[in-house]
Length: 356
Ligand SMILES: *Cc1c(COP(=O)(O)O)cnc(C)c1O
Figure 1 (cartoon, rainbow, N blue to C red):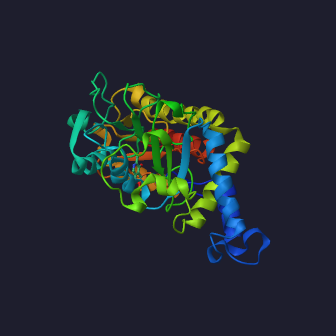
Figure 2: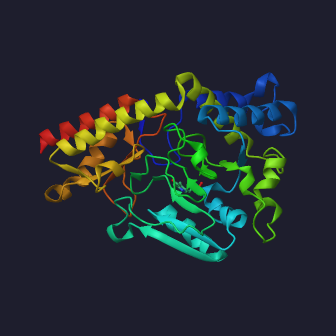
Figure 3: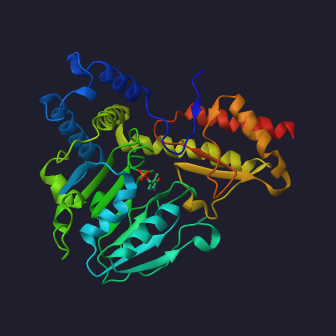
């Protein structure tokens, strides 16, 4: 039985991506060699890198003046790479969860870092609003989707200073107005590819303005100049990302993904709200993530948590355990998760309610 994979990351990928990547691992473009054993400087892999970059730009409708690079180190390396390249005197951060807190911690190593608002007081169950971003900060950093707490910023905000986003877990889930940002980054392993490759979309005219010397590998300009080939790129994850991008385009791109994601999230949130056994963990409806749907058992049914876990795993559902800092359950509903999986989960919740 094919599993319903609700894992938060690494997470479900299109079958198209997995099959084509498996094929390239066995026999890359009919060369008789594995993609893992050929030179990344050969014309075949150069073409993969080029196509990945171009399709990435096309699908997200990235305007002129931006570059897309693929790096190692995960989204976590970007927590320091961003300040290395953009932090002069002062930076501002919105603290909406574990990843945002980690980004903030690294920025503090570089100078005056302002936490403009935080939802830590309520275990990050909402997105702070009505804060002021200091006009003299070099940039404002946000996390568009908080993978652990299930909150999401659904719009591309205008803050008057350069905007930087960690979009690890909602990239390609909706159309994004990239022009509102100077830099968007993310690890691939939530909605794009296996772990090992990190994407960075950067407005090139924001670079070269800091006074410090930047180590070569941590300077975005190095990787822009060398087309993400300054050193050996993670070839298999890049190839897989290309397959996901091809799949995305065939499915109708980010406009279609957004429609599907809204539909999937509606099915699940409606059931969470209706079902007397469960409740959502996010305080405001408008902050609910379309990618990571967090819920717990209602207080009077807390003791049923284990039984529900066992019930859903008996139905072939995996990855539903909530992060330890939230507890309960988390259904990650990334692009590649079929609506049928969400329907199966909602049905299981209904059935479980009837039994109790
Ligand atoms: C998973 C995740 C990260 C960490 O990504 P790594 O690639 O493991 O470093 C950072 N930010 C967000 C929003 C994430 O979901």
